[in-house]
Amino acid sequence: MSIINLNLYINILILISSFSNSFSKKNIMNLNGKEVDKEIKKASQSNYKLFIVFYLKKCQYCDIVLKTLKTQIIKNFEDEDEISFGTINLSNQNNVWLGLRFNVTRISYIILIENNKIYKFQKTFEEKEVIQFINEEKNIEDAFDIPKEITLFSKLKAALNELSSKIERFLEMYGVNKKWSKIISYLSIIFVITSFIYLESKLIDSCKNSCKKKNVNESIKEEKNENKKDDKEKIKKD
Image (cartoon, rainbow, N blue to C red; front, side, top):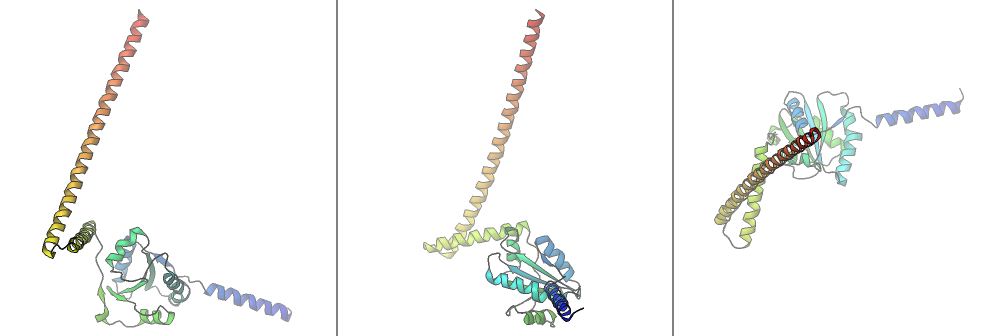
């Protein structure tokens, strides 16, 4: 083998190894509500960590964070089974409630779940800082409790509270005092809910009536058709 061919062979090997090292064998999970709770259960066990990045689709800083996570950070934990990495896309409407549940106040929002507690990452998203954050011994005073899953009732409650606060602010703009604005807002919500229930019941009744009429008309048509058949048969016999 000539020196030129040997050098070429070495260069090809270097390129292949550098290309393969740029991709990690460890997967980053795209999490939704059910998957988050499944992973949280794992994180409640000892010696297991869950690293989550909340992001928005059209966010340049989020793109930098995700790229750094995929190409630099995750490769440092390839052989470790005690940690998982996940992302939650808050641009997806199905994940909006996860943002409320975890009290996401900025983007990108990064947390580590460890020993059934949440720790927030609040430094610049660089390889060295993130690795140190994951590996360091945590101060329990910096920890937050894991919020419970948002149920349908709590979603409804949050929506009603938001509507109530908007009505209150609107009334206060026109000089209504805080006490009365709160009472009026609650009465307005009760009126809206009862109106919705009334309209829905009326809609259901009208659908039932239309279905009954349709069934009656169909039965009348069938009777007429049968009578016509009978008349034709009589004419044939005559």
